[in-house]
Length: 170
Image (tube, rainbow, N blue to C red; front, side, top):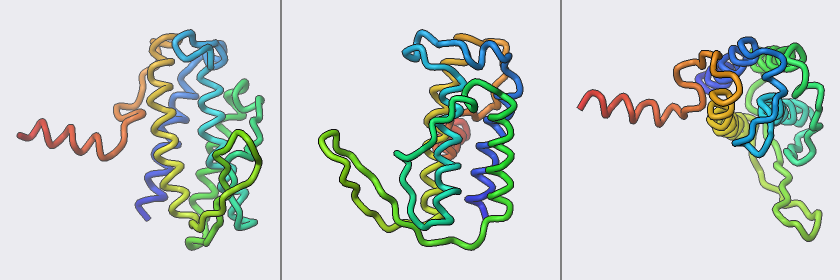
């Protein structure tokens, strides 16, 4: 399925960057990103996928209930292992399963809104979310680790790539 392959491609791009960046730069605060780190953006991105994977077993997904596991943001080896685990899940993922997304958009209470969804729709969301954070990472990596060669389409949506390619043809 193209969706699964797209997820895996995004994760492979992220893995390439994790592998290329020095340990100290993975955890270095980036001034232009409010002192967040590459590791924090990687962790945040990966935890959306792991949250979905764990939720596939229960039928309820709530991205607010992520682990915020600091080990992922501080240890490149752990981050790469998480990437591998997600890819392994994608390689063995069952047919599309129905899910209920639990979301809270209020600062004044903890009441969640329930939204019917499914695994594939949430994978599509995770792709878009990952691309967004990878675009932010691109800025941060250029600042703290300019030696890292980013994959050519790192942090760029497929629709944008297609649009740009069509402009060249004109």
